[in-house]
Image (cartoon, rainbow, N blue to C red; front, top):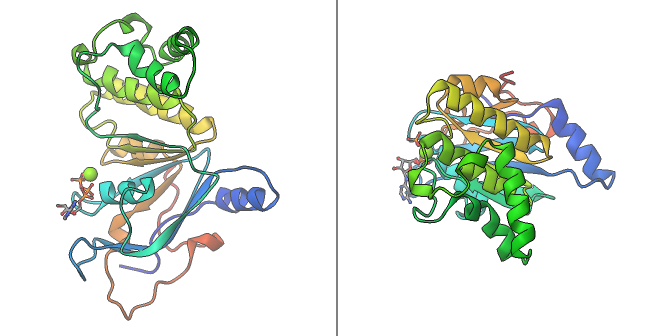
Length: 249
Ligand SMILES: Nc1ncnc2c1ncn2[C@@H]1O[C@H](COP(=O)(O)OP(=O)(O)OP(=O)(O)O)[C@@H](O)[C@H]1O
Ligand SMILES: [Mg+2]
């Protein structure tokens, strides 16, 4: 076990620099983050990382190390026990859960059109845009199929298509390839890359080595185990120097 956990890349400095220059580059800074569901029993601690737009950050660690917990903290659904999440131009959040959550009887088109309808977009415009997005995700042939009839890969792609239908500064994806065959997994990875390229900060919790290797950076929760309250965290990834978490690409 060593030093500060987390990861940063040179692009974190670029993002922070761009933000200081007034450009709306999204980034999320994890500042000495720690979480314990039971007082004193930390899942992870002293986690420092800067997650930047346009990059895919793999969140790895053994089962039970706190990956989904950290995603919930990043989403703002859970208060961390220690430290803080600082969001910069990263207000619009999308969450893609491990087990895709759709409405069984609702068709594919409506899953993508609904967020736009809720935002006040007229039905015809929303349907047109939803069809365009479904085409990008290879789902045009199943637009009128009920969600409940989709394969696992189709359901994952639909969840990502829905994320693409709304403004997305921060995309949190939990184990997207866990139940997919390799080909479906590769398609999903390519779509995640497409969403990152739109300027989204992407964090993907995964056990999948191929997905991890396709990511730009790695945050390894195994490096963020509790080292005891008196042991200081070494280094600070906000400065661009992190002891842990090398780029995986
Ligand atoms: N609301 C909760 N209250 C108490 N303990 C919880 C709660 N949610 C999760 N835990 C526990 O915290 C630990 C971390 O859970 P989490 O789901 O974040 O792990 P994970 O790294 O995502 O695991 P996996 O790889 O299996 O998905 C687990 O031991 C889990 O049982
Ligand atoms: Mg999990």
